[in-house]
Length: 238
Length: 139
Image (tube, rainbow over all chains, first blue to last red; front, top):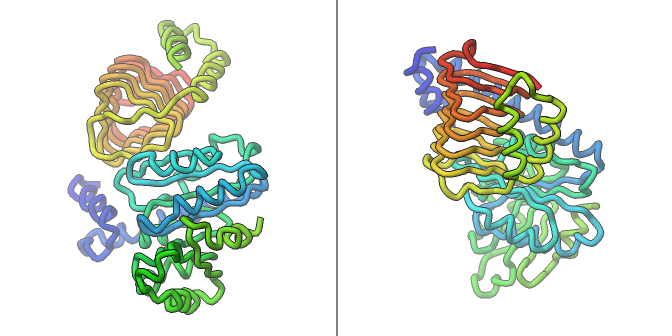
């Protein structure tokens, strides 16, 4: 392939938009995108089969930056660590801040710094679990990169996906991000301790989630005050 | 970690005398001891799956994925689209673009000055402008 074509494909891949490809290379861009999606799904099934064969229950926690994913996982780990051996994989563009916050609650953590990628993919998870002795774990939580858009392109092979939003993001946040709610099993509306002060219409958020995905289980929580944390643990169906 | 690295570096001095079983044992031990050390490098935001240990003056290209279980010595230059996992790279190594190395050891001052190369469970050594001129010892 000529260098200029390779560069163009690379640029388009970064922008994730087929529309930007010239007609000359459109077919190969479409074909590459399909292959990448297929490969992710294949790896995700492998990851799931591998985890299941070791009786590990797994959860992919997605949501925007600041929604409260880390604190929710930390609280779950705090409640569960005496009965379950827990591995937490944290995805972030950079830093080990989230992994450090969770590790103090007695879970083993692995940090992935994605650099410029806006979501984790199944390959990241595959690379970690193939290097772990999976007999040492009962639960796997994956905290995805803070983002309500990109993770919808990449399933990770977990048993359940949990999408977290907070009422500080505004009552329109769910209807504006339909894909992740359609693909998730549990929706958490966090930071409800701020409801009075912010006046956010939480009922609308619950309705929006149910409208997008009638099968999704919706729970309002406050990781800060502990509201409904026991209910969240029971939704994990361990 | 340093003890295992020294043992591997010593073993690389005579490639023909390497005991593959011993090497695998040392590598296994090393991978349990690598700590995460990615604070300083030259380059723009590669992907790191910890643990990854970078010594001084490591230059990293675009779209690079490092880890898990990667040690990179000082004064190493890594090209674009490189992926390394379970791999030890000693000081002064240069890697070209689009190399994917898994469970490999790169001897000190080796230059892999070529592109598009994939390799698993092999010691790589030499200053090579093509894959053919590289010394490869599978283990």
